[in-house]
Image (cartoon, rainbow over all chains, first blue to last red; front, side):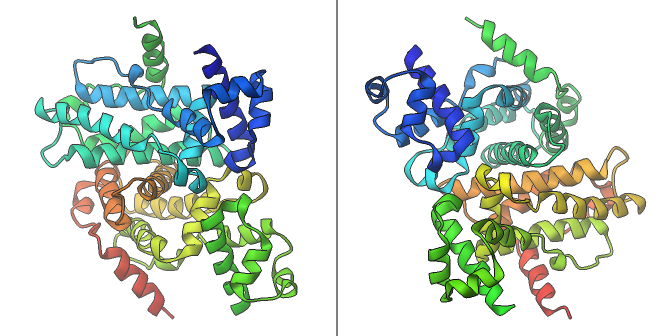
Length: 205
Length: 205
């Protein structure tokens, strides 16, 4: 498992630096400090390495149960915003997911993210946390796709750092049309939430 | 000018099909039905072709003056959502803008979009259309980046067609935290708005 992880880290850094097309198994092998044989034992091709990186990007472990289900949506968004700039595998997965060449041969993590968020939003709806018009599936897709856009654009605009802060702003704009007022007032979208959620997830058994 | 346009269309289709790395000047030349000489008269390199495609993607012509300035923000978003699936140059510009390799050598259209939307939102603020907490620059960036995310994810999720409809949903979620209630009630975010705005822009002198 440790070799597999080292390979995924090396693949992620290589994809980030050279793009999918420009990345070679040779460079990934070299970065991981492994032999070709060890690489092919885990991944038969560059496609499989890309798929491995993408599969790492749906990480439910950041979402711990909260009294308000909508806080779990916020926590998933904030924890990922905290982790993305710190974890090459996540940053590479985002890049791969928007690469047309990659999308022809591998699955993105988007449908799984939409499914995960839809489930939490359905629970939130049952508990009366959401406004009457909210459709769990549509809102899940909207949260996930606007999150993706903020992360991608931020990375390409000169003064665009501090993803967690910008995702907080996104949530502050989206939540008033999702949560009932009594719930809205209790949701924590402050920058810093992501770091705490990520740390708590690390400690979890 | 017509040759230049033909070249940009051919470059856009080629970038969409093969990605930036995989696209060759030879194929672009062939698709445009031109000679190498004609191509190099307009664009000295593949980078310049990519820049040409990206420069086409800030199209203010869709934004005609409206009684409510916030309707102009909506119109820009809806018209672009209508046009993107119909105009390869716009679709290619979006792809190029999220390609790390491209971003090292060319400018994306994002800062100009943020500037354009910031200007409209500042006017809206002066006229009392926006809620007190709205910061024109931050909201402009948020609208632009979440728009981008919706367009990119939609393109990669199995049942994800009908961009205009999804951008309408995005705006319906964002606007309650931007517009004062009296303005909010009068904004038109229905699918179909984009087509009408785009058609009106075509007729404009």
